[in-house]
Length: 345
Image (tube, rainbow, N blue to C red; front, side, top):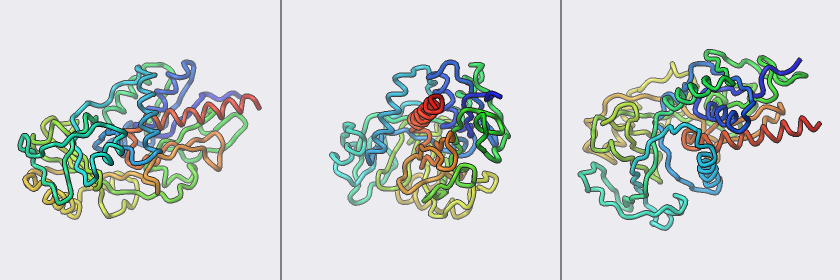
């Protein structure tokens, strides 16, 4: 019996769908099945406020930025899923150090009072203009990718389909049979025994609150020394989002258990009082979601230790939207080497 498809992708978020799209661009005859336990663009792809900036604190992130840039250049057929926006960095670092962290980008002083920008600087902090970043809605990006994939005629997507197990068999991987599989399930990978152990991985609770203000809707503001940022709301023009990490760990991945609590609201108000006190009264609801982070705070792309032919492309450490092309490309390189070796054997 021959496998009914070439690659199975578990997870229809931004990374899984990017892997499927890149696979059919790299290998025109490739057949793919995408399995999603909920709906297309669920999880962090549904709730996240996605920022794409060239922040490269170490060599691993520099390689990911370089690879994503190359993939977008080599495959212009990849749909554009983000919009350009001026980016302001609030930093305590020297301009030389900040430029290094931004991959050598030119940084120039920014007068934060320009245009009545409601941001308060604290001792040691300076504002810097660093070109343009990107922002977007991961869920809308997933819907765009899914439409393109279905229109290709070579990709089948099954929603509300939970993967209970992946087992080795004579023809490939059971449940649906395939030559190889990619697990791109994001935070859900932590609770999936078939995906293998993820050492040192924790679930981080992310709070994203809506701000009814036009003062920030044309730029994003990033902090390189705090885990928070402001960006335009991609769903509602004229509104902004403040994203920040909660000190409370996420206790699970079920999105039905997430809601904006009194503590979450207090956390957001404290951040606004510190960084943008004029906007304290502009908070208008929000949402909570979780993401998986490892000790290196970098995406994991590797082969399963328990099952050759299964490749892990998750635990994106908050950078799934930003590094999706690089993560997908790296995972497909591993798949290609595995299939070449299997064919030779």
